[in-house]
Structure formats: C-alpha cells, structure tokens
Image 1 (cartoon, rainbow, N blue to C red):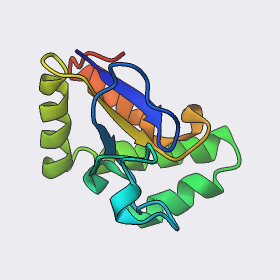
Image 2 (image 1 turned 120 degrees about the horizontal axis):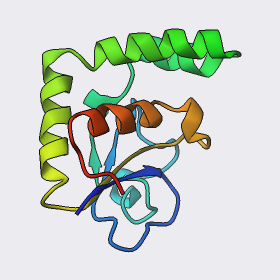
Image 3 (image 1 turned 180 degrees about the vertical axis):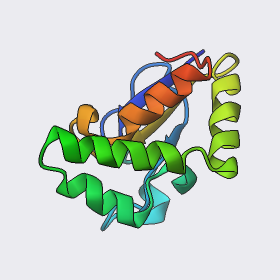
Length: 128
C-alpha cells in the first residue's frame, strides 16, 4: 500500500492502482472517455494542482531562485483548508490502498508533484 508519484501519460506500473490527475487542465486532444485507457488518470483532482497563475510562474522559472518562489507560493496554496484536508486524507489512505498521483511534466524535480511528494511525506504517507 502506497502512493506512487508518476508522470501522467506514461505506462502504469505494476500495483500502482488508480491514478489521480493533480493537474489544472485535462490532456489536450484526448477524449474524456480515453483518459484512463491512455494512462493519464482515472480521477481528476485539480484541487492539488497549482493555480493557473502559479502554473505560468512554474513554467517560466529559469533559475533556482524563481523555482523557490513558485515552491513557496504553491506550498502556501496547499495550506488552504480544502487542499490540506485532501492531503491529510490521501496520506491516511496510503496506509490502506495503493494509488498514484501525477502531472504531465517530464522532470519531476521541476514539477509540483515533487512538492506534493514532500507534503504527503510530512503527513506520514507511505510513498512508493
């Protein structure tokens, strides 16, 4: 039982479980009926995605200082009650079920999913 942190649209790993898409927008050009079949996600969970403004800031970050600014703002966003409660729930569920959360970004180190990994770990989540 654990949370797998994945890149959406990549082949599913064995035992990964359902995928939760922590993205602001659905995949372009993919019919909703094919999201799961094409290994994007089974459930869309935009509440754990950066706001549209923060997505733009992350994509524009050219150096470590700009990335740290994004990180600080995203972590603040995840302190809002709805996001915080959702992170708590996922951390608790990770001890009883396997599932995945993910985003489209190729490089996890420059993706909000790396921050979600840390936030979930701080809450005691089982991370694969």
